[in-house]
Image (cartoon, rainbow, N blue to C red):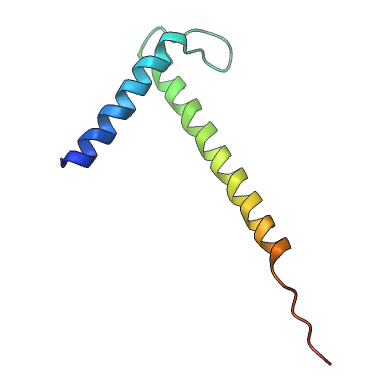
Length: 74
């Protein structure tokens, strides 16, 4: 593991540790045990994926709207 990978890993783990203090599952239940932790991580990953898809779609739509339309003489 190189220095950059180590820094990223530590950063992710520190953030997770901080998040777990106030972590709640989508159903409002606190994270208490390993299955809860797995569920919490799964829910967070889904939120990140959903946001990425939304931003990607918004960016694509924005590019489509701003692109010049081709005008061909028929």
